[in-house]
Image (cartoon, rainbow, N blue to C red):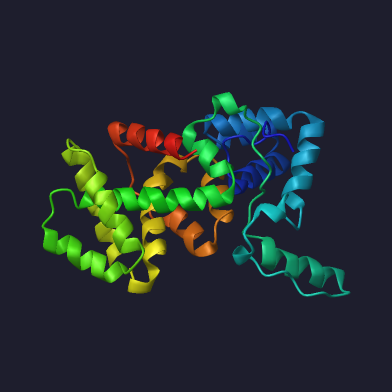
Length: 260
């Protein structure tokens, strides 16, 4: 299905809007739904063909392009001859997942972050690792050597050597704002870090850094999360700062562009 219908709305928001149209009619629904994106969506639903496609998509038992969802997000439902049971088990297995249809946006209009999260999942996983390592290194800019040594001991090899090299590679002149933001991210994640989870530790930090740049636009964050192993995808949805300073946002976009 084209991204035209429901663009900018989450699956839940699309369902609520469609239900409002069914129950109240388009005029009353428009009065209740305040967001500009919802109003555009209601205008699109005035086309019978668009509305029929939306009703079919929202009623589907299995989300579109399920093959793009990491298997850690669901267990295939058990086989059954009962149609009501089959539908129930499918809802249990896939009901929390969103459609994974490719976005209808030309490559020239996509930001580096968008191209990264929509590209090969292996590249995205590697990017989360590199972004997290970079942010941890920034957090230790100017920190006592003893504090860094303690973290390196907890990480173990090979991640300890890689982090040490990243710390040495951080150029001078990193802003105090960036250092403080990195330290806050490290503080939030350090409590759950385990010595044997060095790579996951960095990926967690990377996911938290990337999350604010992909949040707040329909199901984009959830679509990106579903492509990752669930342990990382849930972090991408959960671990993020409310706001990102414009300078840090621009720096992160540049880093993502370098990783493409």
